[in-house]
Length: 398
Image (cartoon, rainbow, N blue to C red; front, side, top):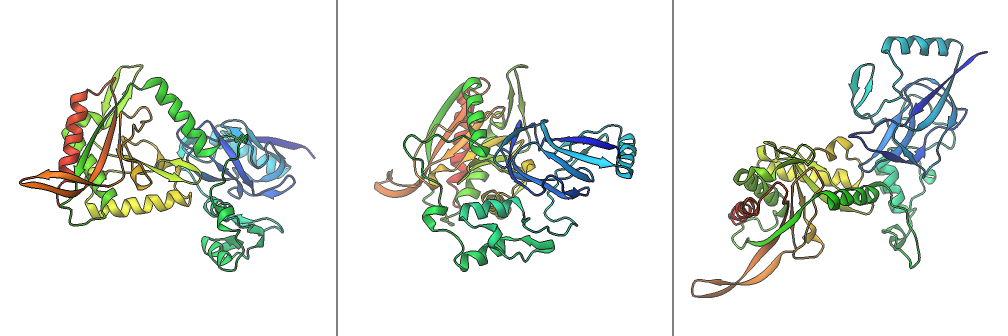
């Protein structure tokens, strides 16, 4: 019986990402799959994404093993079809006009853009020894040191859930806290950069090569704040105030065209420290949100980032960046923006400073601020006015 072999290449999982790491295969060579069955979980520089099968057929070959880094567009899976299946596939190819070999992310398929899809279950029965879990659950299990094969799934179609991980922890199935923490590097150890850490290295190299970096420092006195713990929401609102005063810092720079694109939307990329490295999710349209809405948006995006369920689309196209490094340590810094953005605000550790007041001195709480900007298209005066507007907004009682 004649067979048709179709090669499925790793699709662009969003915004031109060059590669992805194989986290786990959900199929093996010789398995029969249907369209949209879960194929593989991969980790990009931005997120962990589950890739569904683009067609029905038999898995003839897997081109990579778990832990391998695969280039976008490189062969991922061979499908073998025979008889009626091959004829049907040929008919489908004729209808769509091409075989793009891509089903996930903003990629062409049948002349249209298909939104990224995360398939967590599927209609197939769970095969013996096969583990069903979303990337977020797998990542959390890895962080906690939990062996997923020891867990009884309670989710739909035999899927392991976050609640199952919690139950496993309660039953003592996780490793010790020391083992589950971020691994400590040993002298002489060499570690390959992958996922978010690899992306950080690439972004910082790009910034080093392209940006004319300059940084201003100042402090905002928050002694009069009514809500003493409203830091991140107030910082985001203050960034909007800075953008109103000097819109040029909220935009993008194209060095080849020598053009500076100023944006009306204020989409703030928030640098979030995780065990996997630095991840930058985006809080969209901050200019149109009140403090309560900003708080909710920040809470949701931080949680999604830490459990690695944030989508690639939620980590691109930001117009300005906030690095709230002061939650850990450090008063001032020279935060580095990623092209094509032109500004990044750094918030340092809260300080109790002695300040001069009428008739004497007082101790006030102050937020140290660091504003880095691209001096190719932003002047020092513009940056100073932006920072002054931020400080004025931050020093409001509420």
